[in-house]
Length: 337
Image (cartoon, rainbow, N blue to C red; front, side, top):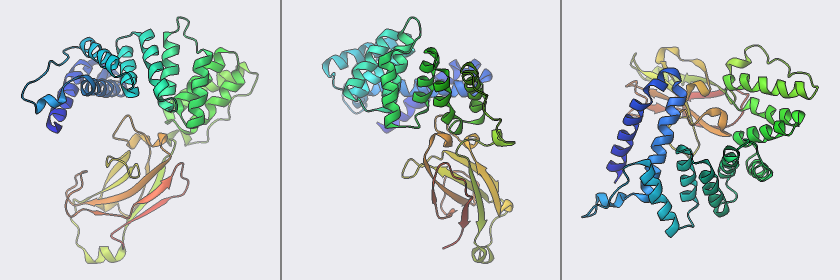
């Protein structure tokens, strides 16, 4: 089964990479997001309505050949088992891909009835109501969903953004600016610059002065950026002969989460001791950024092979848990006790 999933994922990504190649040349971030979104949706649909167990079964059941067939099978599955919030949520996403906006709104509503305190689902449902509305306005029911999402997760960026959009639609420009301003500390510099224009426009419409200009150099530092100082333990360095081609990786990852880093930098051994800044530009995953996290675990790895994947003989510093945003320099020592 694991092999099947790996092969299926690889084939999905290869096919989508070919399809999205023109978009890649114009906007890599959008293309990557497209590949990931379609891959996850395809695998999710197959897991719910396909026949993964048939890999080990003597006879294989038919599998969907198109997105429309997969959606039809998912609809049938949910008719038999309507208590699956994740199934209705996936159906809503699938309808969105097929531009079936009203059906997406209704599917998300079914999911929300089963999982009413899920912040992401609350925002997805509110957004689906907006997109299904012929005038593209956020109604009172969607506003209640956005407010509830922020009660559950005050730093939910999309909930805060859409609530500000509603306030602008209602002529509440000062309130919209106040709603959006906390986002400036959470998003990457490019997004912050664009958002600042929207905030200043709202403040201007409300008769307020624009926001103060950011301090020099602030645009170069992403939200939740980390300053990390890395060094070798002196006693360790005096006792051990290290290869000249060894590398040092400085890594931030989710505590108690998957091993994949949310930010990482590679430096030659000769750079030690060194001070580096980890931020959103160092993220290997476009869907997971430092600016979206509240806590990370930071450590340094001395790699004799120079490879990012941990190998036998690699040496790591003691990990440090850090609450974000962090203002103090994080000190890591490799080879210490």
